[in-house]
Length: 398
Image 1 (tube, rainbow, N blue to C red):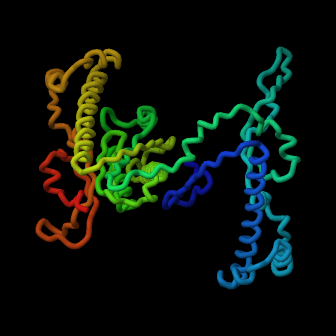
Image 2 (image 1 turned 180 degrees about the vertical axis):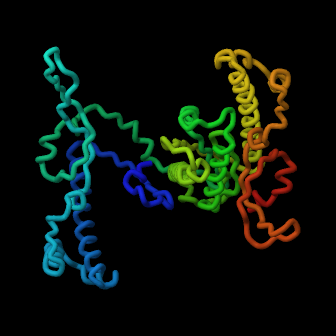
Image 3 (image 1 turned 135 degrees about the vertical axis):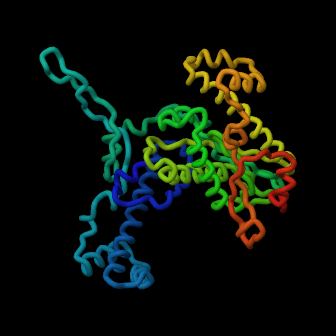
């Protein structure tokens, strides 16, 4: 989201990928030691890289630069920089040598003025970025409030301790759902009850997921969610549940943001979308198909309700009244309401809205009669009944 602020003339060609880990420490001294270790590592890495790239820029190959630096100590690198390049390493910017510390600092801030026009100031906490030494005691002596001993609840993070591996010979389904999507769609002025462009963006993100993860054999999505079915014997991340979930949600979010401009060229992405993921395991394809049928039924139920709701709102009813009108209605009641009040046949609405989107691989077609080797990712909007699975039996073929 901040890329354009710092690189206004450079396009973000692909999303960055970050992984993370959680480590628990028993006391503040150990945390100080951890942070000191990271700053020492910053110095070691930057010291080496400064020498390495100065050598490369001077004409050496990367292998020659590595060989020159092999086995050198800190003083050797300082001498190399000074003798060959007239560079004093200590004069390099502190951001490079010491890294960046981000914390809330106590700052005296004007909050108001008194009756005589004199400023009244209070101490407030302001987010600060500094490039100071955090190895020695001086920084922590001045900022003792940052790491105060207190009652910290280990249960907040203990769930990261265990590595849960999903059972073998089970079909893994990862369902990704957008959080606070109503707010997100309101901020970005999505059409109600359905925004075709926004749904197409979800489908494009799902197609890229299938390219990124060859073990995904099928995807189904509607509204703000997408379910991805993984091959029965997938060994993705050794079936580590936590890594599968975090990776899938991260990649899907990245694809969604990277594709935004392509689908909304005149609309700024004001805030990033937030997707969460859950994993389900099923022992056989029939149960996976039953799960997908349930999601398609849910797509129909939600869309039929939302179509009625927004038609009522657009006709002048307030939202509470629209909810009251639809309370307890069945599918046929909603169809009748749409036809009687708005002359709308619900079954004529686009299939993408009523049936959702199926994403899967199919043989590459040159023409109706000619198929060549290779597979394309297809997106269709069809019933996932027995006929569909008979026609696409290869999807679950081992």
